[in-house]
Length: 477
Image (cartoon, rainbow, N blue to C red; front, top):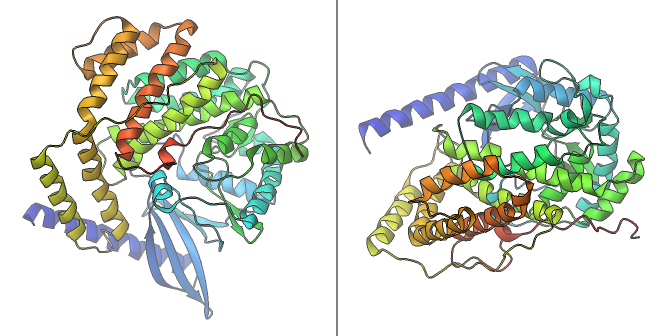
């Protein structure tokens, strides 16, 4: 191990020690009891699970920090505000005790539940997803609670970071535009995101102009038995059309098994008291999924320390492809789902190098500063690179062929192809929507194939499709 690596490890350990000491001091000083243990949780951002003893009883808390990179357009204070308004109106959310300045984080109650929260796509691949009868019963209750949350006056959520949207365009796109500006501020010109953005700006529902609170990432709740234990994760809560949240449910399924989505929709409509607008939900599915690409796109472009780079790449290709499936239903185009990986191009020396790198990462000693799951995240990088060494040439060749067919001229390389593609998307009219939808779907499907690898099992999570909605039966028993 080099001296520089030793210094980095010592610095990481020192920061970890200081964070744990600060968390201990804050909880013991502001809540009481004594801190027994602090666990770092595998998530996009730093989260600690804190175990304490108070008056002889065990109590637990969650400390939620700031993401390793600037990937959402809201602060921690915003998330606290969203949660406290919901609690004020009787929604079951974890109680927040306050904000820490170092590490920048807020402290809230840990909620005991029966939920196995996969949290990330890679975790869902590793652990699978299931839906118990108890979870299903709780999901129905969640839809009732969601309807209740949507009826809270939108003005109560306003503050320094939220204002009331005015008009149908602002209701539909105020949050999307705010999010997309994060790409523009970084000068990230991603052709697929440019296409998505142009489409949602041209096709938002003109007849829906009443804003309400939406969770922003709907479907996240903990259950205990057949009851909702807590609604969670409001970091991107904002003001929009309430059908946005229903679109989230559709966008998450079946990657996270949400059950019978039409039945959940009908249950929600019964308690909200308004008929479902399927075209509006279809639009918001495209908006939700395309917007969900922005944070991971920033994650793979930014040079920030830490984080989960492979998870970011998984989300860009996987969520992007699902967004295109949702769009294809609206545009009315058939997609090419028959693409297969070719035989791998195997370089013996590269294979040996990747094998060596994998084994060396697996040998790294774990500590509080480098936990077992963090070492595992690091080990995903050589696996990604190994798949790229085997299929990267095919990926680029197929991309260049598709770009050539779309544009009528052949770019010299993939960098020039993306530049020309971005320029084409900027000037393309609606008559090109179908061709661009097919193009980007083929591109993202190939990326998913490479990420999954040659031996991916049938039914692999990366290939799960978005269920159609425009002809959903709303009258089923």
